[in-house]
Image 1 (cartoon, rainbow, N blue to C red):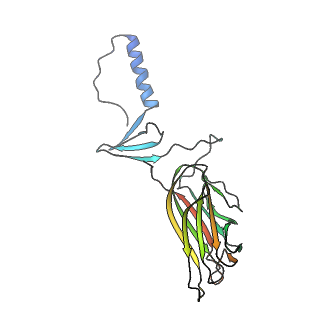
Image 2 (image 1 turned 60 degrees about the horizontal axis):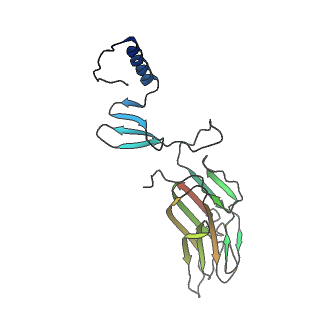
Image 3 (image 1 turned 135 degrees about the vertical axis):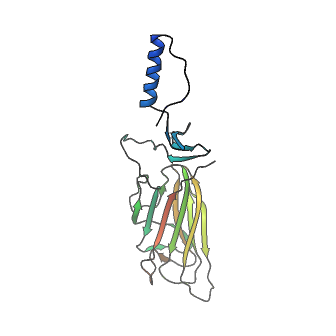
Length: 224
């Protein structure tokens, strides 16, 4: 329900009465805010986001302004922007060389993303705080040092290294995660390193359903 209890001076002329009626009609047909119980729905100044403000104080963002698109009728995905890629086929990592992972399958992606496999470089679609989950699975056990690397615009931002005892073989995998503020257009890559000998990664030989994967989730938080 919209409206006001503010007392007004009666119009002093037909022109003033007409302006008052027009303003009332505009407020009903094109309100700048809507009252719903203890909440007021309105547009956040500067961002264009839809917010709900409580009469006791405080506001929450209900919906952000859609990103610019060539299709004005495009409906954005209502869920959190998310993509998951996997390497479920074997790929070789040459000895003492950093190898970019070629993702051979897209498990899921929301409308913000537009990734076609195979892909080694991931373009961040929109600004925001992202949760990055990267798992690197080696095919067989070994004695060599291995390393999982995530780079953004060519700079390593997240790494994990496994350095086994030289006299024993180990089943190796690296799992690493962190949150990062990304800007639209930044380029993310995942890499594998094998020291001393060439090795394969992708799925694990004893557990073939455990595969190399990357998940990116944009979190519903504001950067301040």
